[in-house]
Amino acid sequence: MADFRLPASPDRTRELLDLLSRAMDGVLVPEDGRLTTAEREFIAAVSRDLREHGPDSLCVAGTEQDPDVQAWALAMNARIGAIGRTVTSFRRSGPMRTAAARDDWTA
Image (tube, rainbow, N blue to C red):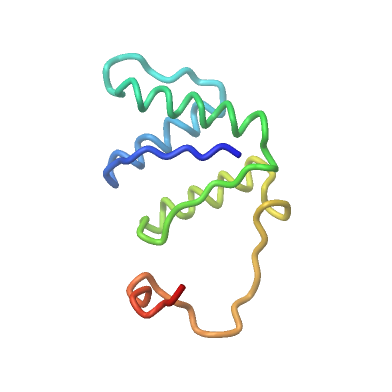
């Protein structure tokens, strides 16, 4: 099981996700100094893993992420064929829990 993580600010996250999407299309990651070595290696490793393992993979955006980042994760899961295999949707029967309500969760 691979687990790739790279700390990034919200603005940087969007740029990295855009570059990851392009890498999935075969576009080379730019080596113009915009990315750190760690960021280039991250994008290369994730795109390679997603292409090789497609439907057996899962892209996750945490609850703290903006809706557009969560939408990107869902779109990437659809793109790699994970919907219906590693991602299953269901209709909630109760009220939605928000990130603000996490404080009252128990483990």
